[in-house]
Image (cartoon, rainbow, N blue to C red; front, side, top):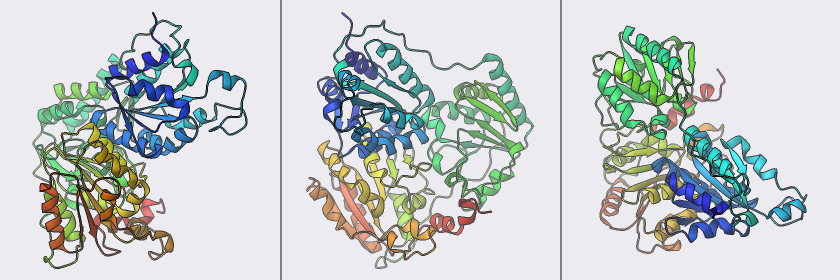
Length: 549
């Protein structure tokens, strides 16, 4: 007997490694909710709202490589759309499952809840199309084919996909034949050979060369391939902000974070002075290039991206990143390694009784990090302060650099902790971002997870104060919360909580957070305009950041 539509969908999800589904239930999605909840090999991860669920799926996908999100029609899917768009922007395969009204309701154009009241039922699917790699509304006849098409798009393009299921089709047997899972994209052999030759020739002719290790290395599961290439060639490597920990920062050859003209002048001078820059999957965006202050001669640049390679002004299409990197490791001649090395943040500066300053806080955060940590750093000044900390072996740093939706980090940290409960999850957030999605804190306790949370309280939106014309504008103010009471209010009275205003209080709080055996929440209070060097430099670089050259 043929499997039902919902049985086939859940089977295929499990086969590609998706067993946790984040979401919020709803009447039109009950068939999807029940299928997950009743499957012994799957787990429903209920979230406080759909936006938080999308952010949590995003964080999960960063650790596990893929994730699933489930919402109800209309109100649910639109609430999640901002998070889905962020996953699209940052190359994360999130399978978005949406429960729809029944086909009989749609055909009759009935006016039902969660619709626009016009008898139309395709508006929301159309709204999602710019931020997904593929979309489908399943029927018994098309389900086998459309599920494969969407999953292939998610996993080969590393983007979200949208799969909607009318509620009355869930338990109907498939009418079409099962479809074999498509093969992964293959490089064109002739073009691949030409691309490898062109890259190798340029590298071999260069007196000096450096690798920019991009975020796609991690997204595509190519860390070991990249390590092999670096070991073979002896090339040094740097990362940009979005790409931090794409490769382990304790590997030989790591020289630090390249941020254009804004920070790290030694790294900048080395990278921009090289005869050849091999970009392995890094994006040339505003925050990644130090407000567009990165100055690398285009004729010196090689860009190996997911499905194409560019050498100077020549482009080789239909070549896969893995194939190019593996080919280069076989043919590129070794080069002497640079003596430039990463510096980290140094020692905290300040006396015990002094108010906490950036010069004390961020170096102290660096010392708090341990091997294998998952670091979720919120958009804003706190991630900018942490960006130049040197990460220990196996630690990963995540920031939503390109999409930059404040509020992302709290639920994303929850998703990451679900993905890797055996690792320590650290959440670094500013209080403005935290207020947007703070209720997801309660999920950590619900699922027995024990993160360490640092909430930086600057009395308002500090990054906005640095970028706007008038730092004192009222729109940068926030409601004053008693942050250390939040864990108990969200059902975690056993968490360690502390409020630190001086360096000594911070030291005591961090020491207790490490050994408390439960979740920990530390509010760090600093002066209103106390910002990290990068955040200040960014505020001084408004002309290049916003294109006013």
